[in-house]
Image (cartoon, rainbow, N blue to C red):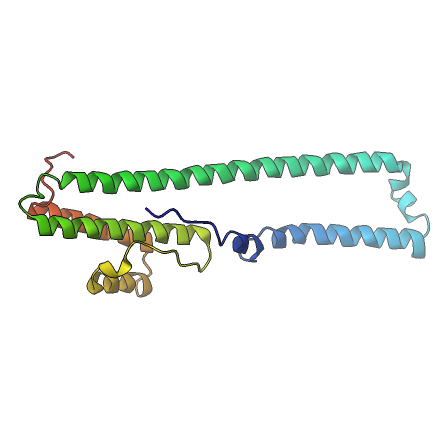
Length: 205
């Protein structure tokens, strides 16, 4: 697996797609405009307008305390929720990486017994599985990032052209998920390797 650096982290923080600023503005701007309208009416057009609404019964300290309390509650609650979701997502990403790494490690280990008899086939199979899993990991992170960033993977050109063309055909023409298509290709590759005797581990493993 490649340890990717988060050089593109600033981009998702500033891009419009998926941002909460637009939705939050739909609630904040009308409230701000309404407040501005009431203040203008009270000071310029209709003096005493706020008292007629009953707002004048509250002194400034009460309004300040109520506003501050609500603001602090909302900020703390949303920050806590956002931090919880962040660590949950981070944990799931590390779990995904660990499980996929263990999968490739196990598959490579299962080919040890057949390495002496079919060295070339085992070497080709190992290289293919490692490259496909690296491409799967990079594709999953690209999909999660929600950006157009293209993450590097291990020796993409080591995968034969027919496999890459088939993958591109599945994604572009039929709209298949790239990660799911890659997982299917790996399962097919493993099944063919077991049939050829490259994987000699007995069931149910």
